[in-house]
Image (cartoon, rainbow, N blue to C red):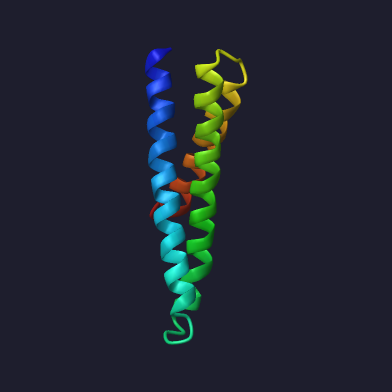
Length: 95
């Protein structure tokens, strides 16, 4: 179970970093929306991606805290982040 804890920690940290980076990119897009109108087309997908990584981060937090405290609800967090990861991969998979 220790390896699962490390996997949960890694997914939580990596998805948190990606969420913060994508949130900054969203802010930059919104600030430059008046100058570059073509950014409007990409902004929706960027918001969706940022939200998906935010949900993945929340699932990682639930999984890490639950497993650290020895609670059975850590499986719910694992299910949340793994399901969100699968959804994100299917969103960006080539057709």
